[in-house]
Image 1 (tube, one colour):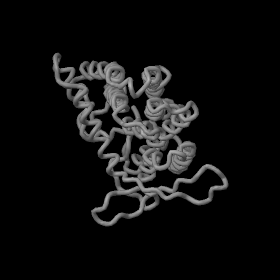
Image 2 (cartoon, one colour):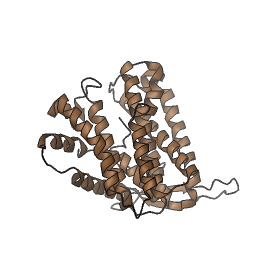
Image 3 (cartoon, one colour):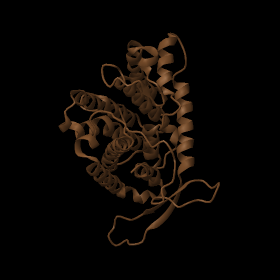
Image 4 (cartoon, rainbow, N blue to C red):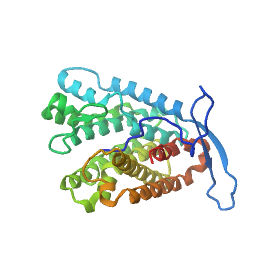
Amino acid sequence: MAFSIAATLTPSPNAYYKPKAGAPVVLRRAVRCSSATAAAAVSSEFDLRSYWTSLIKEVDEKLNDAVPMKYPELIHEAMRYSLLAKTAKRAPPVMCIAAYELFGGHRDAAFPTACALEMVHAASLVHDDLPYLDDAPTRRGQPSSHTVYGPDMAILAGDALFPLAFQHIVLNTPPQLVPQSNILRVVQEIARAVGSTGMAAGQLLEIEDDPSTVEFVHEKKFGELGQCSAVCGGLLGGASDDEIERLREYGKIVGILYRVVEDIFEANTNVKRGKSYVSVYGIEKAIKAAEHLQARAKKELNVFEKYGDGVLPLYSFIDYAAERL
């Protein structure tokens, strides 16, 4: 019930330079000052592949430690089955850590919240796949949880992952690095995102299957966790109120962008998934919408240019989307 990144790290000729054989994939991005008088662009290099792969590896290791096998074994097995899926792209935790590192902190302080976001993400997917909702037989390249464990155990596994996320933040975020007031704001932000006015609202309207609500569904099902991930990183890093709101808008736009791009990709590959942006508005309007969302997301990052190359990982989310158009 959230956004995810593209499956590969193939460089785009529009966003990257072509490295020599065997060289790391590096993002070259022109970062322009927001001032109208600044005409020259500053060229920066960002090792995209190393950043993403190292983060995903660390997140996977910490998630494995966070949910050990114990009594009762069956529910923990079901929780681990969905949470540790090998093809998971870990977009929410990576965005959280990227936003946190923008403000100069060590990522260890952000890992508890990053893992919690993935727990919430996995739980939402487990519930989203249930026969009563999307009735999806597969998820992340493997049979969905209810297909393997049955709907009753899938519900319980999802129910258990949600509160575990909050417990994990509270017990593992180092208070000497993050003020307790900020930790409470992170918990509040995640609770808001998954609640009755957030992701749950998007799921409800998707069930009702009204074509006129497709944009609202995209905003709630996919934009909510995107904005929550970026905002949580900012809160942990001590961002100002204005920076938090910029991160909120950026994350929401990126979450919606990925869903629209996925709609376009599925339409081009004849994948049928019910109501989508393409089925309601057509592929041409969907492509224009995706391009507009890309521009809006980049505009929200202008305020962070003062942090130099620290903003480049956030740009990488936008450039991933461009790969699939």
